[in-house]
Image (tube, rainbow, N blue to C red; front, side, top):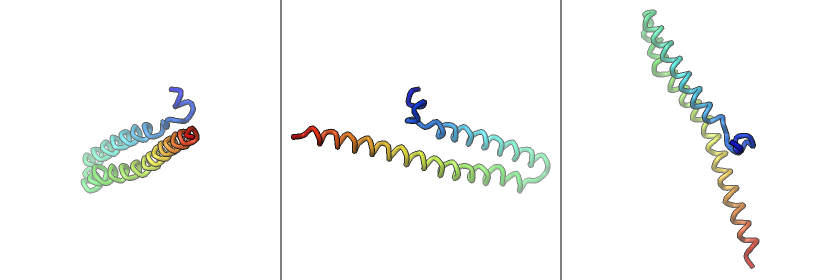
Length: 89
């Protein structure tokens, strides 16, 4: 909990996943409504294309957070390496 309050752990990736699934559910509902309105081509777009576009957008955003995590890990490893080198005679 303290990591979240000190911004060491990001909350946004979890929120992005939740938002993604909510938007996919809305796409499916819209697709069903379009099927009921006799618009099969539009329904196909809502069933297939819209979730794929959402997935790509969310993955691109998640890549930013993955890069941030990797950089933090690297900084932590380099900090440990520098700390052990300073102790060596």
